[in-house]
Length: 372
Ligand code: GLN
Image 1 (cartoon, protein in one colour):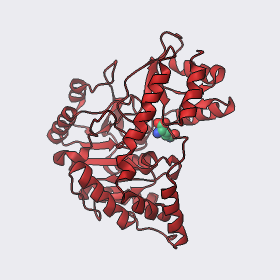
Image 2 (cartoon, rainbow, N blue to C red):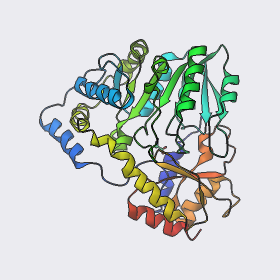
Image 3 (cartoon, rainbow, N blue to C red):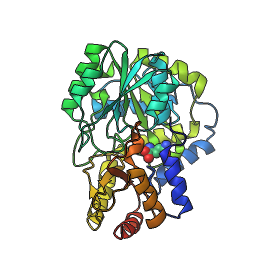
């Protein structure tokens, strides 16, 4: 396991050098005042004691409605949804609820940096499979070949951090077949579910009934509502799987901040709270792409998430970590080296930019990047 996450390292370095932080994935624009007011109102109205272990029931009900509306899946708010302190916690708890020592879990790299430590903490074995280059498509042959009698689960992530690629309906069909045939479980990291661009559809495991029967879908309100510091999210899984999840959750966290849950419930009743997110962030992505034309970086396509990767072969031959450190120290722009999303520490030819920033921030960053 790496000692310190790359997000902490790069954000600290950005601060030290007073650099513009396009590294760690968090927005620098304000969240909705309607939502902060709803949470304030909940506090003033006395919603300040423990919420139920599984979450504030009206929130779970409004989420069940949203899931039915968006993905056509009927989930039971009582037994199939649990509110969690963030998406990362939901992923850890789901893994812990199904893994025994010696189990294998398929992880597609580049992978968000918590997955492998979460698997190792359960004395299970991560089986690392690289996504296809250059555009990070899904290597189905390699995945099918990696399955054996010890394989317990696969972790998927769409929209994908760090590449910004998204899974297609055909990928989901292949996944469903793999999972059903081999009786695997799926941990589906869908924290960027609402950030899918160009009119494409988010491929949630919740759209596929047979897949859902074997899945834990993990979501984040922080990513959805531009409040990553709130650390609140949820997990959706069929009843039998959710029972195991809650056994872990009840002794680990027990329950999540009540006024946030009450406020988010009110806010979610207005569908525009999530339906307008994609166009809002797509505008930022498009603006960033347009500005970056003035630089020597080669952006890869980004179809979703907060992120866009870029090659820098016209600029430097440094390994990506060294290049990202150099960019922060000498040019005042922090990014994330994509090799941090691989276990074998091979340098990758890409760095990751977060475009979920104010226009002025993107302009100021690109002004610096033009000189690189
Ligand atoms: N998910 C965010 C990212 O990928 C940050 C998470 C974190 O800082 N741990 O940048």
